[in-house]
Image (cartoon, rainbow, N blue to C red):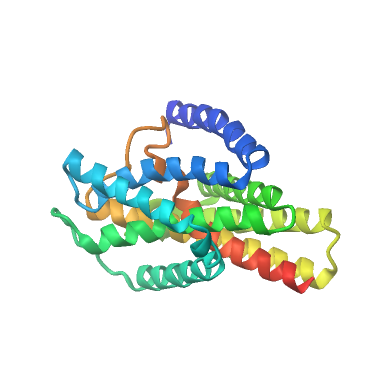
Length: 277
């Protein structure tokens, strides 16, 4: 990555991070869900283009349908099913991982793809449900949501720098030529360290501490799956970035792709762990 782009990316991250931290820690869950929903509506606008919806009117309709789905899901009767919906999203991402593992070629697409449009709804609804549910239901929910963000940031940063320093063998050249196995190892190592630090602050017994570290490693691996899946969708449209809203990062999707797969798994794992302690 050229130095100028790295500087742009760093500056954008420094501007966004305080807003994200303040929102997670200070806003009640309904207002956090609203703010996150607005961000995801922008991501839905970008996903519409990746699904082959080229007209502005079509993209507006897609983003509006996504926004409507969030409004419907916030109904009290449906919110009681968030735990099950979150678990379903973990299953969805396991299926995506299996699909990527078996992928041997990428078919270039030019027209609308209804399957990809439907997949986009699942990809974007998942982190919204997971974060809202974790924020509202876990003990110290806001701090655990913040930890999830920090975990993703640390994994992303370490993947970049370890990949630059030691990366030789490509992870998935068909999907993302820049990703290396060394970068993934760096991300997993950073996640393990984050898990240890969280467990130490929670004064967990050794057995639960190990489970928390394993969970964080799996969440970091899931974040890689989320990143690779977005790369697959972009490559099927011969696109490098999902958009240009965030200097140095590309589009909103390019910034949250890791979170889309990581959030449901983290929420499922952390709430299960809390129930065992």
